[in-house]
Amino acid sequence: MPDVIKSSRPNIVFILTDQLRADSCGCYGQNPAITPVLDSLAAQGVKFNHAIAAHGTSTAARGILQTGKLASDTGCVGLASTLPQGVKTLAQYLTEAGYKTGYIGQWQLAGNKAICDDNGNATAEHAVEPSERGGYTGFWRAANDLGHTSDNNTGYVFDENGAKVEFSQGRNEALVGFAADFLNQVGSEPFFLTVAPFDPMPQRMLTPVDYLRQIYLQYTEKVSAREKAAEENNREALAEVQKQERLNNPQLKAEAEAREREEQERAQRKAQEQAAEQEQAAKQVAEQAAEQGDAPADAPSADEERVKKLTVNEDEASHWCYLCADEIVKSIPLKCNPPVDSQIFRPGLLFEYDNYLGECKQLDNALGALVTTLKDKGLYDNTVIIFASMCGTSFNSRNVDLNCATKDEFKMRTGGCHYATVKVPLVLAGGAVKTCRPVDDVVSNSSLTRTILSLAGVEVPSDIVGEDLLALAHTVDSPEAQGPQGKTPEGPNELSLPPHEGTITPGRVQQALVQISENRLGRAIVTDEFTYSICAPDADASSDLHADHYKDDFLYEEFSDPYQLYNKVLDRLYTDIKLKLREQLLDLIEQTEQMRPTVADGERYYPPMDEEEEAPAEQAQ
Image 1 (cartoon, rainbow, N blue to C red):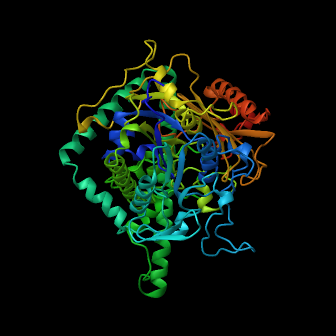
Image 2 (cartoon, rainbow, N blue to C red):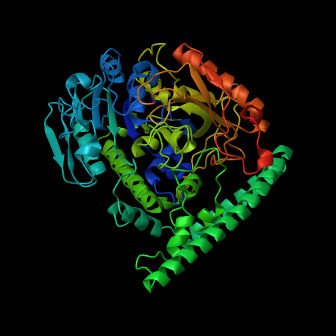
């Protein structure tokens, strides 16, 4: 393969993070760029700007990557799923090919058996049985649920003999230490090492003074005010250009004007309702004070009332509503610049997001230590480093709607079709990778299994899903490729290449399939222009693999709505686009699941704002 050293089969280090959003990384637009090591690798190798997770639930995603088969084939759709015994795995293919394999970190494919007794009661974590390790018969430093066996400073994993291996240092530092132990054991044969951190999956019970938040804040203080101002100016200029481009499109302009009028009318009504509520609340407080002779001790302050009114009620919010609460956004001190979708749908995110970015920074530090170890041992030049995430995270902000099939807080944050959940970082780098470019093709992270097997020289079976991503990156060398060719950055300020500066393979169909479970059973198609998804209203989202009947769920347009705030699935202007995407999605389902379900038009779930808007659901299409 022209993109990889061919003197011998390359070593492969696969770093698989949990719930890392693409926009959390500097090379995908995070400002300040808190991932300099990853950014450097992205600049030296191949960065996929439009990588899509094949499944938004971590267990299902792990099953896909270990088998090369979709969740609907393996049965790994729920958080407690177990990797099927009869399916040949990535580790088994590579072992047969002469690779020495090792696995470190979070496994999550042994179901509940690793944390429960025979009666299903949660107990202390147990070692994953050898038969449930997906063919990893050698080096093993893992736990089925690393979050159950450790925190950020201490914990334990299990070795290949089932014995506890304790650590009393940062969790990611410990994983890198285990990786060094594995590298000390490798001989002349090539190796495949998976390092699967638990981080940066959003942690529960974190406080604003958590040390991870301090890591992030200390790092951001190193970014000068001048650099921040320059970045902000550039962002404003870009926003102005995008605004003008949208306004030059007659259809989008008319739609924007109609939406603006609707928002103004809604804001006016809301202001009137809030004024009436405030008047009523003041009247009640005055009456209580008159009865008690003094104001009640627990009476909320004016600031508390304001915060309460600016908070989106997640129990009542519907994804059909066009939520774009500017007043919420403007009320947030954007020190850490949370993603716009999270600012709007979950304004209480700030402290959690600081912690989240702290974990991203800590994870990048661990990546740097691993790269250094590879170089110190003379292994880097013949190693391919694959950095990927199973899925992103919505911070519980996008799946609270009337099609959501669960009330469980954790399951709500998994799955879905939104970019927050499915747009993930994907970088192939290392000394053995000789291609340097960003790629704008829409790709699925399910292709990583085929890519790894191709790198190892394994003849890939036809039933392994996806494509060889390095071969795809090589095709953009052709003169017909669209967009600027990849370039090597000249300085540290150029490492963070923004999205959509890459190349696109001519003639390639730009689409990726997403399977959805836990919060709903659904399917989605993501293209370079749109995201369209469907859901099965009568299915069991935690166990059903297929459905015969679906209905419309979401439709978003990337160009006019990059943060996916406005669901177009009921918009009559988008009916033709929706029907075309529906056929594309049904074709993908038929190819992968050998069935072609029916899809009904979506329904209008929220009452119209005005009586004259009222219309039958079928007319809303």
